[in-house]
Image (cartoon, rainbow, N blue to C red; front, side, top):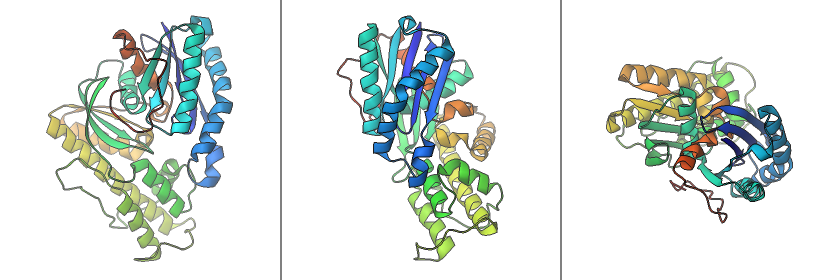
Length: 339
């Protein structure tokens, strides 16, 4: 079985081809970083137009790399939720057209659950049930993952996602877009203990996150309490220390809440996904925590952390259960669990 998957949920146009044995034959990603960098963040209308322009060339390249033809495709998969609605619609419309033309089944994949399935793919074996931590630009959430298709939300952010906070702090510090890699590089030069920044809900029992106040604390540390305007610092100790202190605060909260989730669920497996999980300092501290808790941890390699179509292989689980999507499948911008 050959599956062709489309991913257009945000600012990465991606097409993958994989088998029912979860062998990835191609996983092509056309990045839009160059288009959004000048705006300091993703512009939904720009992203949707870029998907329209890049989807067919990306699909052609995926077919070439996989050395298969459209006639060899057994099913079409599309990420239809969550994400930017205009961007999602490009992928959903293209997937319907392909499935109808090729006369093959259409399958949907949930972008959030696919991030956790990427960890399962990297593991090469079943990892469920587990605690799932998704940390990305749009989501910071903990799940009880009973199976690849059965998730219960344990808790999430009440405001900014961790990745969004990285982007905003990068803008404050004049580090550019995307913020995650820029802050990580700068943090490596600084002292994480230089600033006592807030760690929301760190000692509370509930599994919730909040990073908006942390962003404001960085502003105040830079310009003074109550002040939110000024020139971004140039290279040097001030900028590096703020980046390191901010990153450490985010990591402390993510690690603490993942530990709480493991203890509450009494599970000994933690799967982590999303673009922020590419952060090396976060990976290291999560691994150390899991070892201390006697838990297994599963984090995908870098190429499967950020948005990509290969993680849509979670739809193979739907195919095995004959859970096909109807041709009135819609784009669903907000996470609504099973879809």
